[in-house]
Image (cartoon, rainbow, N blue to C red):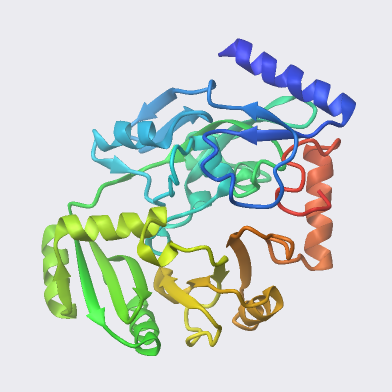
Length: 353
């Protein structure tokens, strides 16, 4: 493995000297996400394997090329899980999971990918081998580079290793379904959010609101009876949430552009053309629509959030919402410090980087 580290460093130094773009790639499961794919592929898959797993401490450390399925299988044997439920979209690796920063249905209840990153080992645009954070929360001090790398789409550096916090699997889960209007579903979700309910996921689409309860068997049973609705079988419920997580649910099919709007959970139904699926208690709105980008982004901004063109054949309107000048300046300075020759995943987030 040390030879691989040396190879990575030499490749990066040579690319920096020539100002040649490098495309960091693990399983390639998220090649569709983000902007342009430029440069020679820097393959992280060979750098794979679980380094350390302290199940009693709820901490897992693994190399970037480790398949997510391998990590999830290892911790499941000890009754634990990646609570942010990262999507696989095929053969996802740990490095790609952290670089993309995507979270699944449990995000609103458990936290985002970034919340579970304790430390990273990475290589910057000079080929330097760097470590940030640690394997326990109390070791995280100073500028939190570990979480900065989360969601950066590989534009700041090559992720080598990641330490993650894991959580116990819930003893019981149950899925309830309600026939409801969109407006009423949003209202119900926000009312429930202000109560101590064991809701771990929610999704609304096509006149149906689905809610997952997770926790102690007695608590899940009691709350299932209290909330009412139609109780979905365990296998069917698990399949539904996996379909939302992996976007194999029928809602996500078709060639229409798929937008991801992160907004205030209390926002009333968005009057936008197309079809919507609502997650995270109302704060995540998936939109399949051919509407123009300005209309969609203006609606997201008015609702206190932003819109990402998550999947589309034509990305000429830009994938990520344009940054205001102050944030653009910070983004530029970070890029210059971590990747001065601008070799990593050039154009993956914004065309100018």
